[in-house]
Every structure is written in structure tokens, then in C-alpha cells.
Length: 64
Image (cartoon, rainbow, N blue to C red; front, side):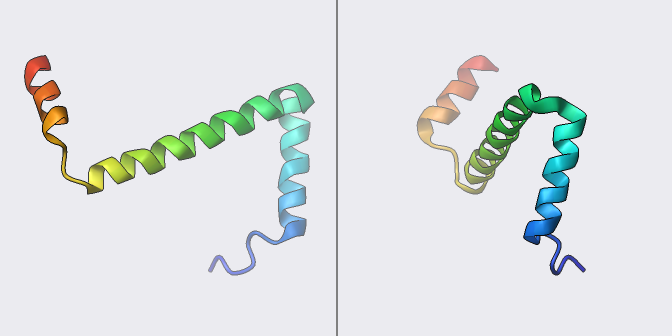
């Protein structure tokens, strides 16, 4: 279904449309925010997969 979706020409068209919509000044900020969001998602998935450490469980016990 998604075979060949991210070909170089498709990515150029998506970049050009984003440039038209957001403008050249907002595009780097948008990319930075997207990168930070993906990084936070990956870190959250890693934390969810591993069991919490004893220090993390102590912090949640004192907060709640």
C-alpha cells in the first residue's frame, strides 16, 4: 500500500507545498518542533517498554 510513497520527487513536492504554506521563516521552526516531537515519542516508547526503576517509583509514590 505504501510502496514508493517516499520517493525523492514526492518529498520535493511535499517540501515545496510546506514552503508555500508556512513560508521560509517558519519552516525551520516547524522542522525543529517535528524533530523534537518524534524524539519525545521514541523516548516515551522506550520508557513504556522498560520496567520503571526504583527511583521513578519512589517519585510517583511521593507525588501521589
